Length: 449
Ligand SMILES: Nc1nc2c(ncn2[C@@H]2O[C@H](COP(=O)(O)OP(=O)(O)OP(=O)(O)O)[C@@H](O)[C@H]2O)c(=O)[nH]1
Ligand SMILES: [Mg+2]
Image 1 (tube, helix red, strand yellow):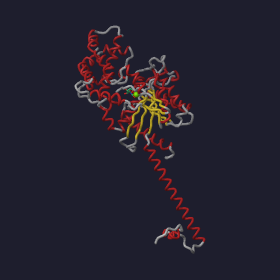
Image 2 (cartoon, rainbow, N blue to C red):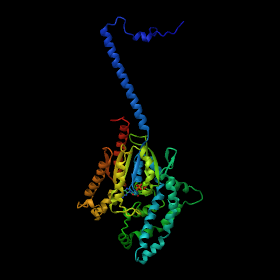
Image 3 (cartoon, helix red, strand yellow):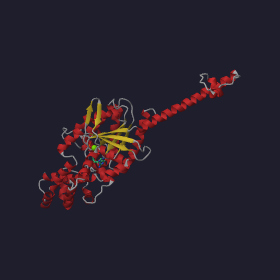
Image 4 (cartoon, rainbow, N blue to C red):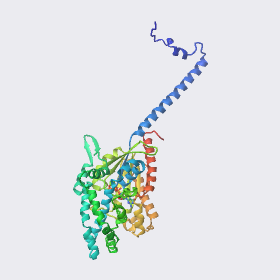
């Protein structure tokens, strides 16, 4: 019969491990020292396993990045390039949906020319004829905007819908995900059986108008009228007039560059979730909060400050000679600088990693080369050379100085001179940032030193 006994002398293992009965005091001291060392090693291994587990679970938490910057600073463009670089399948799936947005961009450019000509004192008969023949494009613009949910009435509605809701103490973004909303709407309606989609109908009008658009854009007197009014369509967002025959085509499929250059304004705060498909973080989720940059939307961004690992702030530096519409003539660069100062100053953001993109360098370079004098708009610029290396160095220093002066505690700001539509260069920059954000993310949890 087997009986249980608490006496460990009954346990064969305990008995085997027990010290010999005739153990000398020296042997005993040696044995105990060895046991202490073994325990220490074992505890170290346990701690390592615990930390690795914690690091793993931390790695699986999504990385959250907030995109900030004024209207048309390039926030959504940057998010697009992140998607193109690290979530290529999702990018491919959306590519065709951008077609309608690009057609709308094209039509908007034509209508901008028609607007400018309305105020021209006198235009040639052939130009007047073109204006008349192209007038249906006004309706096409309205139809496409409605189709994509961008019509003016809807815009206000969309802005409040896509905004931030506070329910009890909770803050959430409306679940529709950014540009996918407009693109999805385009797709859905296109599937409507028995009816040609508004996008198809619009394309038919564009196809019929193609030669007239080319004649209007190629007309020297039209170009001169635009020049007089300082309308530089080439520097405006969503410019596709130079690609007219490629884009106004039934078989048109947008290229990567086209999608990056397409302009679709962001309303409210939009959330993009990308599962990284490539690189070391494959399978890792990143969430980008992309905000609509207009000054009236800025109040709705605040809740996102609490919960992000990094902020990518975009300041378009080409806008030094531009004003914000309806803001009492506020200079756009000044607006960016004020906004940047607020972000640097914030105690709430003292621990958040700050990345600064001084964007639209391509446009700045063209502007300076044309002789637009920076010192006329920025008095402190003084008699420095009006060229790209000098101007970009000066502006970079100004922004960095603000961060140094106003940050509540010393911090490093990763600063880059960027041209967001230069997909290749931008992808390289984003690679650097991605690695740095991941490292900082782990460091903040004391997992990496
Ligand atoms: N030439 C040039 N165009 C750029 C650059 N960065 C962005 N763009 C274009 O500028 C337009 C506006 O960019 P978005 O990314 O939509 O700007 P945003 O900051 O998201 O603007 P909101 O959504 O209105 O706040 C797009 O048509 C881009 O293709 C750049 O560096 N150079
Ligand atoms: Mg945007």
